[in-house]
Image (cartoon, rainbow, N blue to C red; front, side):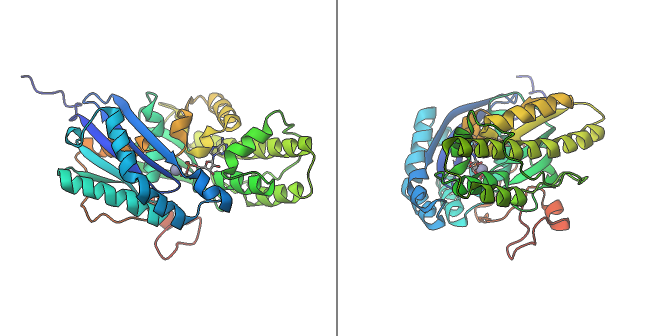
Length: 370
Ligand code: KG4
Ligand code: ZN
C-alpha cells in the first residue's frame, strides 16, 4: 500500500457533549482523512421551559436538568448516527467557559466514556466550538476573521488555525446576546429575549427611536452595549401600544446590528492589511448570529470590504454539540488530547494571553474573563 499523502490525517469519529448553559446536547461528527466534515447526528434538549418562570437561566436548575438526561441524549446521538461506543475514535466535552455545575456534568460524562472505552478525551473550550461552527456546513478554510456573538460573549478574533485565535476586540460591558435579553425583558418579552425581540421587531420602524451609538469615535475593535441598554429601558417604560413596542424593538435590533457591523468593519480593515489582502473570509457565529437583521447587515459590511461571508445554519448558531465534536476532532487529528483530570473552567478566554495583558473586565478570582 502506498503511504498516505502528508496532508492526510487519521479518520475521526467523535462524540461531542455540550452542557455549559441551558442546552443538553450530544452529537457525532466524522472528520475524514481528507478533511471532509460530516455531522452524523446532533441532538439538543433545551431547558427553556424549566428556566422561563424565572426569566433567565438558574444555574442549579440547569445542572440538575443536565444530570437527568445527559445519558439519554448521548445514547440518542449515537443511535441516530448509527455508531456504537466502539465505533468512536474519541470523546469531546465542553470544559468551559460556562456555568460550572453544568460543565462538570458533560465533562464528567465524557471522562467516564473515555475511561470505560479507552478513548482519548478532548476538553473543548466552548468558544472554540462556536469558532468552528461555520465549518460544520460550509467550506470555510483557516484562517478567517470571526465575530463571535452569543449570550455571554462578544468578540472579534483572528482564527489562524486549529485552536489558534488572536483577539482583536471584545465587549467592555455586556455581550450582544445579553443586551438583546435584558432589553427584551424591559419590553416584557419572555426568556430567551433575543428571538422574542426579533419576532416583535418584524415590520417595525427601525428609524423611529434614536438610540446612542456607542464607541463611535474609538479606533479599536471593542464593543459596548450598556448605554444602549439604559436608553432602551427608559424608552420602554410606559410604552404599551403595539406599534410603539414594535418600533422600539426594531430600533434596538438595528442599533445592536449597526454596532456589530461598525466594529467588524474596523477589524476587517486591520485584518485585510495583516493578510495583505489575501484569503479575506468573515464568519459570524454564536446565538446572536441567528438574527436575520444582524446577518444581513454583517453580510453587507463584508461585501463592502471584499470579504466572503459565512454564517452557520441556525441550528449551529445557538449552543449545540456538533461544534464541540468538530473542535475535538480537529485537535485529535493533530494528535492532541487531554488527561482525565482536565478541570471544568467557569472562565476560559480563547486568547488567554490577550485577556490577561489587556483585560476588558477586572480579572476575577478564577482568572481572566473572556
Ligand atoms: O450561543 P448561545 O446559544 O449561548 C451562549 O453561548 O451564550 O447564545 C444565546 C444568546 C442569547 O442571548 C439569545 O437571546 C441570543 O443568543 N439569540 C438571539 C437570537 N437567537 C438567540 N439574539 C437575537 N436574535 C435571535 N434570533
Ligand atoms: Zn454558546
